[in-house]
Image 1 (cartoon, each protein chain N blue to C red):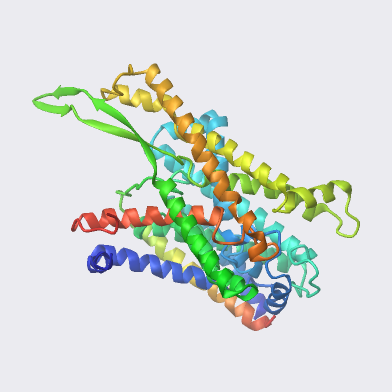
Image 2: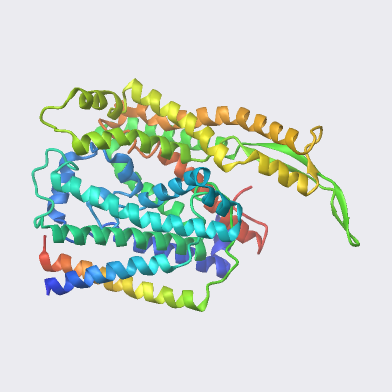
Length: 76
Length: 435
C-alpha cells in the first residue's frame, strides 16, 4: 500500500508539474507584481486550455489524496 | 464604504470573481499546513516550540506564510517564482535575445513569462533540496534533537523534494488563476496572504511578552507607519504633456493636455526584496558549510556583523543596498529614451522642452531627482523594524509584520487590489471605495 501510494505520488507530481507548465502563462512576470499596471486578459481561454484545467484539477486532487494517504498510513 | 462593499457583492460578475479568489485562498491556506510526506509532523511541532522565532530563515518563512518552518507541501512557496522573475528581468539587460523579446510586446512578454515558469521549477527543485538537506542536518532548528525525517533514505528524500516542487507548481498555477479569473494579481495576493497570516501570532507574541500598554503603543505606531507608507506610495509628480492636434481623415485627434505620472517610489518593493535576499546569502552560506562547534574567524565576523540585524553594519549595508537597487531597478524598468520616443511619435511634448533627446534628458533628470527621496524612504521603512528590537524580543525583527518589507508589500498589494475592484465597480456605478 505504501509503495503504491509513493509511486502514485511520484507519477502525479511529475504530471502535475508538466500540466502546469503546459498552461499559457498569465500575469506577465514581475513587472506587474507589485503596484504594477492593470492588464486585462482579453483573450479568453481556449477549448484546449479549459480541458487542461480539468486535467490539472484532477491531477491535483489525486496528488493531494496520495499525500494525505501517505501521511495517515505512516503516522509520523 | 459599507455601501461600496454591498454593491461590490451585488454585482454578479464581481461577486463571482471575489468568491473565486476566496476559494483559491482557502485551498492554498489548507495546503500550507499539510506536512510533506516523509516529514515527522510531531517532531517539527516540538522543534518549532523550542526555537520560537529565532531562526535565520525569518524572511523566507515570512514569504511562505510559515509553511517553510512547518515543512509543509508548500514549503518552498512563492520564493522560486520571485527569484526566477528577478533573474529573467535582469537577463533582459544582459542577453540580446531576451531584450528583443521584451521589445516585441505581448507575444514576446508571453515567452518571457514561459521562461520564468521553467526557471521557477528548476529553482524550486534546488530550493526544496536545500531546505530538506538543511532540515535533515539539523541546521533549520538549532539545538533541536528530534529527528525530522524518521526514514532518511535517499528515495524518501527524493519523493519529498518532488512533492515540494509540485507544490510550487500548484501555487504558481493558483496565482495565475487568480490573475486570470479573480481580482488582483494572483502572485502578489498570495504573498500578501502569507504575510497577513503571520500577524495574529506575532501580535499575541508581543502581548504576551509585554504589558498591554506597550501593545497598544505598538498598534498605534503600526497605524502611523501604514498611513505614512500609503501617503508616500500614492505620491507622484505629474509632468504635463501636451498633444498636438492632428487630422486623420475627417476626424480630429489629440489636442489634449495630459500628464505623465512619476511616482515617488517608482520601484515598488522590489529593491527591498533584492537587498534582503542578497544580505541573506552569506548567512545561508555560513549555515550550510560552517562548523557550529568551532567557528572560523570568517564565520564569527559574519555572525556578529551581518546576521545580527541590530548591528550597525547590517543596517548600513541594507540601507545602501536598497538605495542602489532602487536606482538599478528604475533604470531597467523605466526607459526614458523609449518614453521620449513614444511621446514624439504621437505628437506629444512637454511644454518648454523640445521633443526627442532633450525630453529624454529632462525625464532622466526628474526621475533621478525624485528617486532619491523615494529610495531613502524605502531604506528607512525597511530598517525600521530593527529599532523595535527591544519591544518585540530577540530575533523577531524582520519577522515583525509591522515594519519593513512586510508593510511595504501589504500596502502595495492592498492598494493595487482595491484599485482593481474599484475599476470593475466603476463599470456599474460611480460610487467606489476610494474618494
